[in-house]
Length: 95
Image 1 (cartoon, helix red, strand yellow):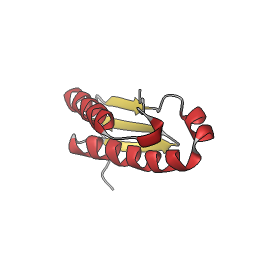
Image 2: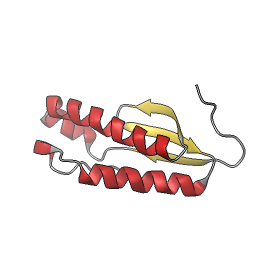
Image 3: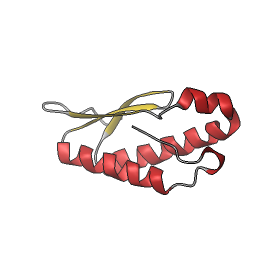
Image 4: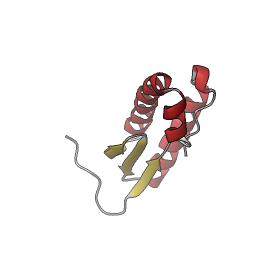
């Protein structure tokens, strides 16, 4: 396991907007969407030297040694999420 960054650290936290409602409306579709969401976020964070230290439901908590890398990870994640076809869910909004 890669150690968490130390010193001055930049945190990136994410959350799917309205996830409780989405799960209530279509649990099977959201189950698949959540798996894809997790893969896209993990990929963006890993690509920019971030470390995920906690995942709670649909929220990611990650840390970066470099603020610029955190920003690039956030942008990459948003672009990937925006480009994804979420099917019946329409757009998946992640903040």
